Image (cartoon, rainbow, N blue to C red; front, top):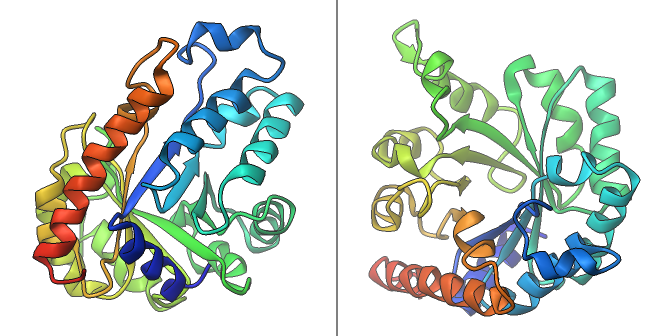
Length: 272
């Protein structure tokens, strides 16, 4: 999916919602466990309930690969039912020496046909560039994350600049705003203004709105650009909104609340 195509979906749906498909066998509704493939059935219900509200879906690969062959089958079946107009993200956080990264890219871009993959850029340019060689595919680099341990390294000052800013500045030379995005946690919304000074045109994948306390209004205020430039992810707040028979309806209601908020922010920014 190209940047222009993604932007058109954002305008059409008045949404920049990404739904995280973190399907956990210990958390999904118990009645699904009686089915042959409970992970797929759970994802299917969530997708059917939210696909008119979301522009992207993000399976966290850890929740699938831990189940071995069955998990990978569930993942492939899930990808097959995600509508073509929705952007898909392999939340795999890969990143290794060049030849290894090339095979990771082939796995997720060719075998599973994801539109994008999250990447840990710690090993530098040769660990990222192999992903950028694939046409109309996206590399989403971890920049400023919302977890507690983010402060261990990301805010360390290197030559007067926080490490996460150095990551943004240097890595932006490897690709462009048509094939590279960045992960920026919503709980660090106050940093978005400075981030936009470094990468004004790139899309940002923003986790942490809702369950982790991030503010949609703050994220939009500081992070939105002329092409929206945001994909705000919600996982637990949507997919585990309810654990009963009506879990999909509850997921839809949760997604609708976020989409409505996003629509308001898009209108405030005169994007729609």
